[in-house]
Amino acid sequence: MTEITVEKTSEDLGSKTLSVTVPQDRVEQAEARAVQYYAKRAKLPGFRKGKVPAQVIKKRFGDAIRQTVLEEVIREGWETAQSQESLTAVLDRSVRNVKFPEGAPIEFELVVEVRPELDLQHTKGFTIPRTVPPVSDAEVEERVRALQEQKATWLPVEGEKPTAGQLVRVEVAAGDDDAAGEAKAYQLVLGRGEALPAIEERIMELVPGETKETDIRFPDDDPDEARRGTSRQVRITLHEVKRQELPPVDDAFAREVGDFETLDALKAAIREDLVSAAAREADARVRDQLIHEIVEANRVEAPPSMVRRLVTAYAQAYKIAPEKFEQFATEFRPVAEAQVKRELVLNAVAESETLAATEADLDARIAEIAEAQDRPVAEVYASLQKSDRLPDLERSITEEKTFTFLLEHSTVDEVSA
Image 1 (cartoon, rainbow, N blue to C red):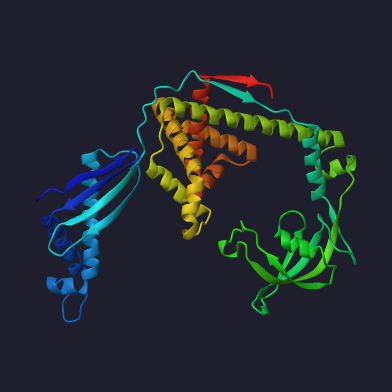
Image 2: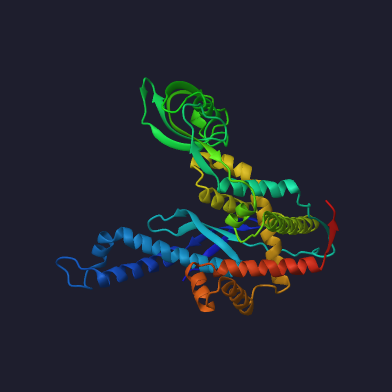
């Protein structure tokens, strides 16, 4: 039987394009097997099961036979390519440009994405500054203010035009030529950017119960490209205005917010949270800077195929419209390139230093989660398994072990803000 041929036509750090040719005799054998498969199962009027002539089977199940043949030869071609090109660490593969003429070899292209094998020569000896900015009194007061607003009540305002910071209930109907469209109800706090500035300006010209028809102009950077810089007539009805009544900030407020006896205790807890958050952010910056140093020292490149795949995945997650994909890709590509380089470095170090999460690591982490949640370990494990989060947990553990290794072999300098 004639051999399948595989020829590499292009390659970068993260992908290979392979041209595959499956000879005609293999195609004919695959077709014969497909015909035999359908012949055994076909039930056609005038024929006993399993006794239908091959030509009748081909005519009756032609499309299905053709698809079966194609799937089989693509599988065989992929197996040949794997062996010939020593394809390992495959991230994804796709088939394109299939040529399936009658009575001839089948040709197609395999596009294979692989994780590059990095040989990192420089992963140790870096010096990274760590800066933890102090928490100011203003930050603590800002957090207290946010809690105060959460506990606020909204009191009706009668006969007055609304102002910034007040809650309004309105109906807005967009005009369509000479006819107003269907009115839609909205509730928003003025001044928070929850509506177009032009809309908010018109609302603040009304008193409760008043309706006004007016033209508004959409901004030049409106998310909807079709509306940018255009004007439209709208009808606005203001139904209700409420002002925010903030509770006094005192010991009673602290007890209402949480398990705090005094306002000073509440502020102390807020400051502690802010200090912890600042430390976490500083640690994250250290990790990012360390990865940046390793990337630069080893001249790590981001394979275009991996960057493109990540950009596409994020576009799908953010539900980016097809017509806006190119703009999104252009803006997001630097972020995707940095993320790809980060993953390549961490994977390479984890592999070279044997830092991948073990079963014992996973069991220990699940036990910690179970203890923190006061749940049985088996229940937590089953929940993670059911939600398919165990691989994420393994990756998280591996990343932590890898950063611990890298930081142990570099210097972190504490720098005053």
